Image 1 (cartoon, one colour):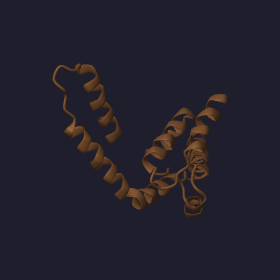
Image 2 (image 1 turned 60 degrees about the vertical axis):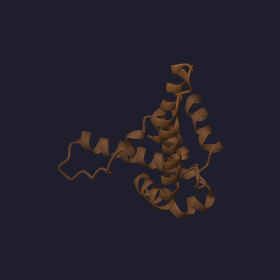
Image 3 (image 1 turned 90 degrees about the vertical axis):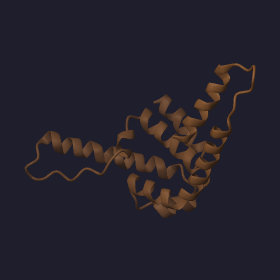
Amino acid sequence: MANSLSLRSILDANKLTGPNCIDWFRNIKIVLKQEKKAYVLDGPILEVPGNDATNEEKEAYRVYMDDLDQATCVMLASMAPDLQKQHEAMNVLDIILNLREMFDKESHKERFDISRELFRCKMSEGSLVRPHVLKMIGYITRLE
């Protein structure tokens, strides 16, 4: 439990304010991955099992919904109060979609700036290859 508390402190120190959306979401994914709940970010919400569903299917759905609720709470707790109010009635997937709509222009500009730096990156004559490659890898990783 101490590990999850220390990772959650990352979110306390870096609350979502708007311009930091990309970094904030990266931190959300790190915390949820450590807590084994990142899978809820990957796809559509499971459908409610029918009356003819097995106990295993019903239990899997219950666990999924608990994980979805916990991921939603982690996201909301790590937002600035005005963003919390906007998103408090949404689930994780709806929050992500709404944030992308709100801050997509900013993320496009950031990706453009990183791409520009990557394409301008030239190795100086006589310099070592390793630092240059690591710098380029850093740019590519940031673009992801």
